[in-house]
Length: 279
Image (cartoon, rainbow, N blue to C red; front, top):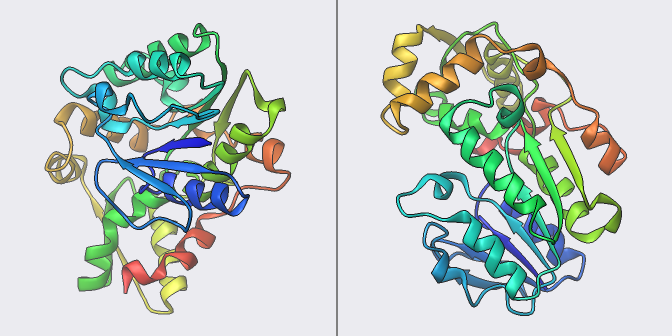
């Protein structure tokens, strides 16, 4: 049995589907109940309260650990989740980390994630660590404005990074959970090309078959908008990356190809699959 945390999100959902399709027994963990593929057990748990996850790993051979905001919630102790997994007999943990632990290691969120990586390495478990860059699915932030105004508003319109399709992250995670050769590996996951916000808007327009205007926000405008849904510190941090990516953040990684034997999907593929969200 394999436990998938964050099972209703952009990565956890396709990962759960892929594992179930491969004939694996899966326990899907998320905060709220949700529809699951046939045969998948669902458990509602809050990972910021690790005690709520205690019964989940029993009988599991592997765990996909996606923490997102739970890593930084008040009172959270992600290390306890790894300890619980080890105590329950879990053999392998695949951790979703972030490319930022390498490219911008001194922000508070990356310091905490790097510490968790180190705890996993020292746990005695088999492990693999996935470090994706920006997600193609972040374009869903624009869905409402595209539906209402046929427009995308974003800062740094002509500055790009090699964003990755979450479906590719899910496929790499499935390989790491199921295949022994990935134990002890750290994979940096990017898309196949650097793509700017303006080019993403063009890809969305192509997927819809209708025009989408691009409006470039100033950094201050973008910070104000982003601060409504995330801490101001994180908004500034994100804008630093989007506005002035480092050479390491511009690098197209070969790791998706290395694991899956194919190139990562381009943003246009993601836009075509998700066009309904923008209509």
